[in-house]
Amino acid sequence: MKEIDKIAYIQLVDGKILSTRSKGKDKYYIPGGKREQGETDEQTLIREIKEELMVDIIPSTIKYMGTFKAQAHGHQTGIIVKMTCYEADYEGALKANSEIAEIKWLNLKDIDEVSFVDQKIFNYLEQEDRLE
Image (cartoon, rainbow, N blue to C red; front, side):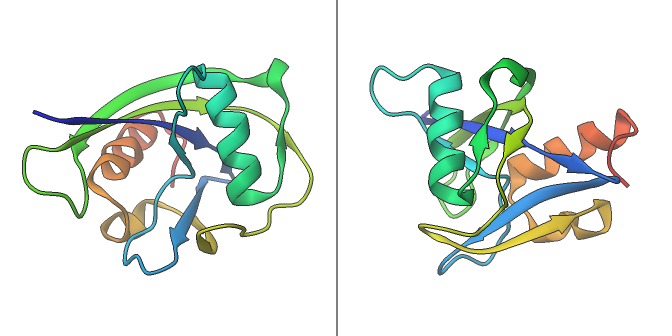
């Protein structure tokens, strides 16, 4: 079984979660991405969020939230995505960049618009009473 290792950025405001849709994709994804060789989780998070959203993660505020696994959206059965999730504060103004076509704040009613692993994260956040 193949596993895709990704780092994700969880940003919650007023019961909604920051999500992105990449160009040519039909689902929204929690921002983040794959690590480059030799990168730590924190380095991956900082780099990916700068590339995708044009903001700077404040390293001292990075906090581990959880790790979630599910079938990878758009991949053949048996390919799993592992999302290691972090919360953090940032500096700057959110702006779609690179492969990102759209930034959107989602809540629980939007769960069908996100990938399988993001659905697990949405359900976890609902149980924690952090997502409306």
